[in-house]
Image 1 (tube, protein in one colour):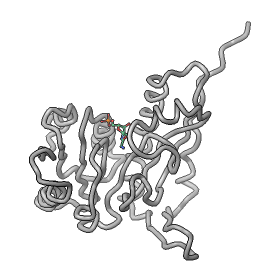
Image 2 (cartoon, protein in one colour; image 1 turned 180 degrees about the horizontal axis):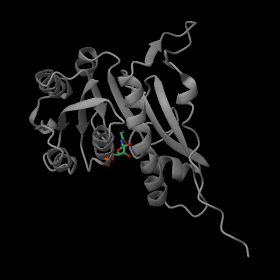
Image 3 (tube, helix red, strand yellow; image 1 turned 90 degrees about the vertical axis):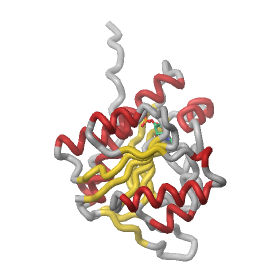
Image 4 (cartoon, protein in one colour; image 1 turned 180 degrees about the vertical axis):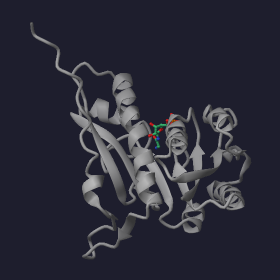
Amino acid sequence: MIRLGVLISGGGSNLQAILDHVSAGTLDATIAVVLSNKKNAGGLARARAAGVPTVVIEHTEHAGREAFDAAIVTALREHDVEYVALAGFMRIVTPVLLDAFPMRVVNIHPALLPAFPGIHAQGQAFRYGARITGCTVHFVDRGTDTGPIIAQTAVAVLPSDTEESLSARILVEEHALFPKALQWIAEGRVTVASGATRDERPRVVVRDAATALGLGIAPSPPAASST
Ligand code: GAR
């Protein structure tokens, strides 16, 4: 059982997936607090409906990113948080947060990193003409979407796709991937190993990787019948 703090900025559909897995018993976690940088974030109502404490810390009311993150760290500590899940949290985090929770801040990103980091990743992949994109769960380091990758699901870009339809299919996969990766962490199966050579990056090792590899390419919709 891990105590999770979930940081959001928006509608909170990933938060909802996490809450649903906790109540279904498939994510061995307590959601200790949901924290939003926007007081109107739709995800706050989802948290309240689930009986989870909520905190709003508006970044506009802090002098800079570090002061904002220090307020977040205080709130997370007040709720005895062990791991931090960024579930659509649209702020760049600083070492103030990362050093308080070293390799314990986990992000969901709507692309197959290292491709298409940053904002509007689904649109970036769509406009680029990628044939396959997807979603990534990773530990957060000091770069933007550069931290060690825990799990990924690939999503094919269909000829008929719009940016919206592609984003919607990626989101469905996010809702499955994020709780699953968090459950691996809750089970103590996830460690970060330093690279074997100087130019090799730190990488995530998931114990019992056969199960981990159960996540793969999302099935394509059935082909239209030609008869
Ligand atoms: C999700 O698609 C998530 O991957 C993305 O924001 C959306 C939040 O949706 N996060 C990022 O782009 C982070 N850079 P939600 O509020 O419905 O979970």
